[in-house]
Image 1 (cartoon, rainbow, N blue to C red):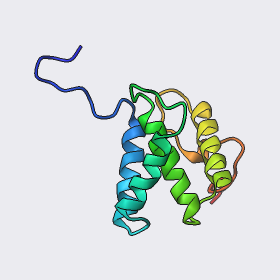
Image 2: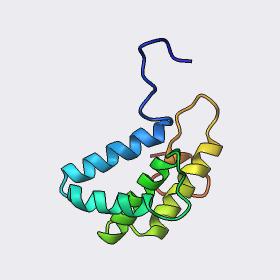
Image 3: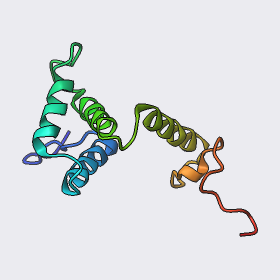
Length: 117
């Protein structure tokens, strides 16, 4: 329970804040307009099966961002899914308390430097 006068956090999970920040950064860099973003997010939120209490809002946010990236030719669904899977494998392979790095993905040698170099 939060102390009196303290509002609930805006983001329930760190990934939600990261998705929000990525969206703002991509907009600031001119990838899409706010109206394009609003249309994409609105389309996701209005899909059948959306939670009436809004607890899945950032899942829709993420889906809208992925769809915009795909529509703009930045990253296709397959690329996004492959990267997400690589991060998940890296997370599972990372010892507790250590930072999760994509280099920890045991299925990938991309981006790794050789032991001698």
